[in-house]
Length: 154
Image (cartoon, rainbow, N blue to C red; front, side, top):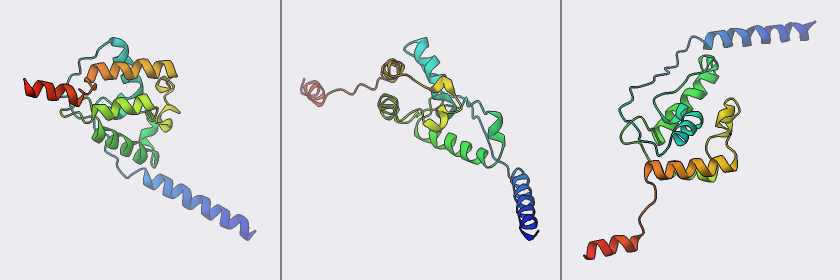
């Protein structure tokens, strides 16, 4: 009998804590968009909006579960961190070379994002097309040091 009573007390405490943490506010701001990207193609834009925009723009679509703590804290942190590294909605955007590389090498989009966003799951072919589109959109092709030397000399 004592074991059942302890289990009930633990359950009640967990429910009270879960309900209580719902009152801890999580700010989910979508600041104004102050930069408009000129995409190399509608396909690149569509792929970005489906796989990247929730964390790398000010146009986050907050799902219902982003309102339930403690998941809300985790999602809000991800979005803040994503915007800090690369945010197409603001100038400066951040490191476009790193963004291209993250898609090209397969570290982005994160697995934790693609679980709940099937549109963000990219095949190898889609990843190749998308990363090339990002490269063209953000002009991430770095000039070689030789060509910049030649320009300086003339």
